[in-house]
Length: 327
Image 1 (spheres, rainbow, N blue to C red):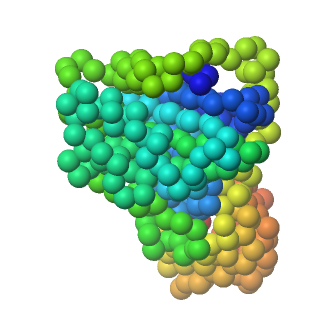
Image 2: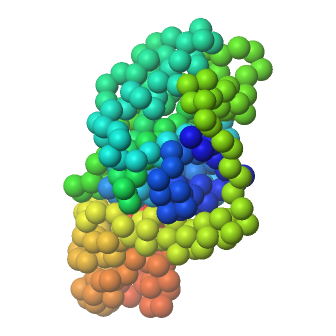
């Protein structure tokens, strides 16, 4: 097995690395470790906007990245270790999560932590989740990757993933907001993510005698950076890939009550209706038509509204008040 320790804490880079390694090592067994700076990793089939607290994420410069595997949304930071096993799909059972979570459980049990696999893909200690795992098959390889919460910022986790459930109605899979915990409460004093990673590698070496270490080369990093720019750092992948959904929100402004209903497809506004008790000198239908095919994101909507005189449609309003209704 080839063990690779990512040199980066950038979530775009590390999620792109998982895909890059499929072509770089098409036949070999791989174990990739990476630790991300604060970021939100969204399941492939999820509606990103329905999973995150947009205002909080933007205010705190938290990156949002869609991964290749399904499952729910997770929060990453420097107190969270991520591991990613790559094996030939023909040699493994896709429904088996136990094989590649066993080293984590074994290591923790040796540290007197009563960890165990429960349900389909979660690792728990005393009934609380500290690790979620997901899988995918691509290019003849199977990836099983998971998180290990060592000392993550739990309040940030809660705030970053907080969202009003009434705003979105869609067919995407909503994340299960399970009760989670940090392992730091169960581990020896002065433990941290780097120490756990070191012990994890030693645990792997015990059961895999032919392990080797591989450091990403300059050519590898260049190729991964290119994949970041072409895919993993793009709005089209992280937001536009989201399934079709309906968005609804209403605010009471000084100019009156304003309510928007939007149908969004591939991240773009497909249909929109605006209701309220505001007074307008121009037909609201004109504004609705102007917003068709605009990206459903704050910047794009604000740019469009700044190109017109918004007061003609809502009376005495500030543009930021109106933009807030769309997010």
